[in-house]
Amino acid sequence: HTVQYSYDNGGHWQTLAMDMPPLPDTNSLTLVLPTGASIRGSAPNAARIRVMATDGYNTTTALSAGFTVLNRAPQVTLAAPLAGSSYPAGNALPLSASAIDQEDGVLPDSAYQWSVDGQLLGDSPQRSAPGLGGGSHTAVITVTDSAAARAVVNANFTVLPLAIGESVTAPVVDGFCE
Image 1 (tube, rainbow, N blue to C red):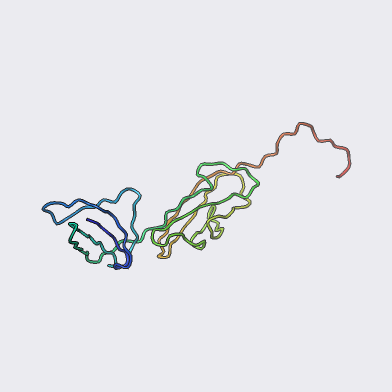
Image 2 (cartoon, rainbow, N blue to C red):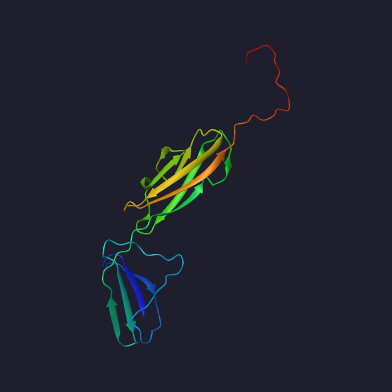
């Protein structure tokens, strides 16, 4: 038996299982997808399951009635800033994320929206946050797919206070303004 899935009324087929042994005396089958496996969302009543069975000579196919698989939000990976990390003051903080969407694949830059402490910084997977003062901050990346499914990931981080390092020699006051 081969079990396939279509998200678009049979326009495209994804094989879910192959070489499944026949089950005696039953008209039902439960198929559990392995961890990490996923299927695309569908338009309303456009998803189908197709089962093909063969004995080596004859092949038969059964097609399910249409059903709906809901669209899922993108899967977002936040690379920077790292939650719980500390960063030196005085430098622009790099912001970096990536996302993949089961239905859309790679998403355009316009799908990304960055903010730090509620201040919008713009779109694109990579940006920077200039001028952050010392203290606790929160970076938020929001990624939205073409069907308006949205994923939000945030990271709390700290910017260290600006410090002046100790000098080995004391400054010399000579009376000139240079």
